[in-house]
Length: 306
Image (cartoon, rainbow, N blue to C red; front, side, top):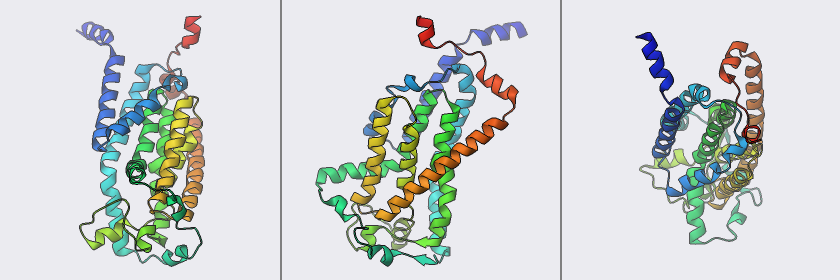
């Protein structure tokens, strides 16, 4: 019986099963995020040259860690939005914010980013709304999913740690200390995102927590890490997309210029901290675990072709 079970196990195409599960998880991630057609197109373009950054790792061994890790990210993605708004509401109701910077920011020349709307059209407004509304999570997910198909757990962790996993807890002290609201609200202008708020309380919660800009910090961190990849299509697309996210925060009169600058500095520091943590933990991993994960190394395709 045991021999028959082993025979059945070895006869299965576990690589194909892993690919099917991976595609299912990708679909679920997009479904939970209500991704538009444009989101999927952007992801597909970024995946075009993924083989240029694939590491020499057996698919089956990668799936043993990669699939559970992607599943964990997916789980927290589904529950993260509700957690964020619960914390935001708690901060609004219980925090006095010792530093209130609305008027200070208003007094700094060009800090309101109005110059970003020197050229504006209804079409550009719609494009910038799409960029901003999806940018907070799509920039991260594109990088994580692409790193998944490079068969690199290290890259997946690098993108995840440099994104929401470390930025979220590290940015909360700033949001607890500083009350700075969105540009359009302080200037008493219409909301260019066309949001509707059920209550005045919901509106006040939504427009605070500007310093530093987390839209900027997430997208800039992804941009910095994407520049490390070999594939030019991916690098150019992510530089363009992430730069558009940062620009949209100014164009739509959401963030102040100093919010954006602070977000970029914050992102750079988080990326460096992520590099240090991953490097430190990698050195401490047991040798047996490293050898098991690496397994039998396959020859590069160039060598096989030769």
